[in-house]
Image 1 (spheres, helix red, strand yellow):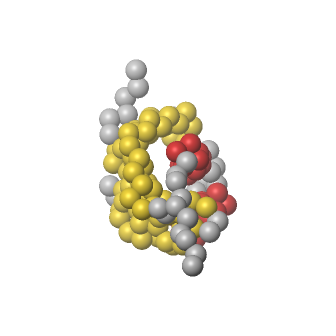
Image 2 (tube, helix red, strand yellow):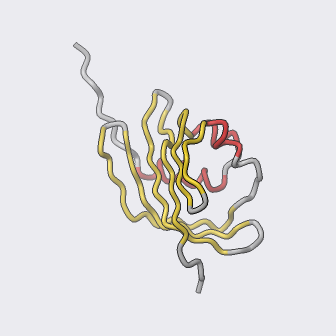
Image 3 (cartoon, helix red, strand yellow):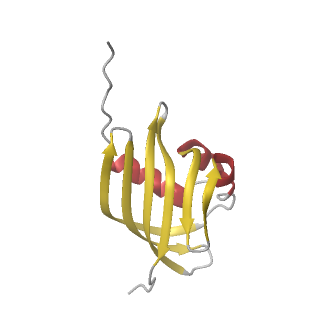
Length: 127
């Protein structure tokens, strides 16, 4: 009888993937997002296919000066991880942006895939 292998998330690996969603291109999104991903932003909330989500990264250099401060990480199942963090970045037009972000990952045969992502903008003033 086969035994199920417990998967333990590598926090740094997940943060590196997360940073890639801020700075990566369509190919990065296509590789690291699940078949479907539930997204929630103030202006929209819906399920997006991998191709739809990848299409949102068509513009390079969308963000710079990205800073991620991890606030929490939970692993409710052996193949599911949720992380929450505060992100601060600068848009390509120079406007500062800040948000509380939550992302959910599911572990597939070919690695961790984003299956949930939500952002709640917060005050972006930088000192």
